Image 1 (cartoon, rainbow, N blue to C red):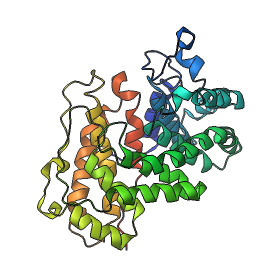
Image 2: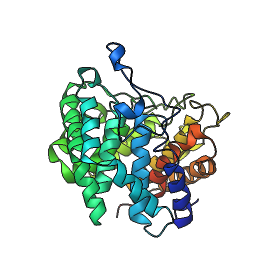
Image 3: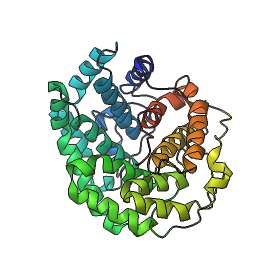
Length: 340
């Protein structure tokens, strides 16, 4: 299986730099109340106007800032710093927040974009350079908006969303916990309460997947979330009943990559993301299993073949490359060592 190194990091960074400030084509998620609301992406979103859509721009910047921290010697570092300095300003953050203050924006990018913005904030808070600390501080007013939105929304969310697309709530909570566990105890508690309310009693998952345009596995995403939420021994017991036949290779659909028939079709290209995110989930899940658990071999093999099938296609067509590197990084940066 491919590993992240400075060569691959540079390739991903160059790709992300090519789209985070590319305004068009653009899929706009925007409610108009009248002709005065007909605005360009950059006018509405002075930072996150590129990458085909708002959420992809957010996690494009997560990709860039993550690689900037981990590979400071790559050739793209100076360009990342210059672009970030020009865009991550107090004025632009205020512009992003002003858009969210519209009553019509209450559900804007919920929950996928919310989670990625907090994931971006969590990444910036890890930086120990002057510029990294400055970017994190500049972003904090927007970070606070999304943290508060989650805290207001989760008590209202009686049910999870199990689809394998942007509305998947397990994915949103899993990302949000990367921020909340370190920076917002109340949000972390709300995420854990929701996860347990939604999923603690789930048993014998049938895994009716994949669907044609999914980029997340509803089954594996739930398991990855519960691995993060539960103490180790509690997760083992929960996982035993959630996928009770995994040791015998069932459900088989979770162990084989999805076929991608047309990578120029944005929806069909989602399936490359499914393969990447399954690889990430499998690595997270097996990290939560005991060292002598036979299912570690099943999951490890599944992770490897899913990633090997998708990594060659992270770049090459804009319908995929404006977002796939982020999902590749989630998997490649995940440590799969067992709990001991």
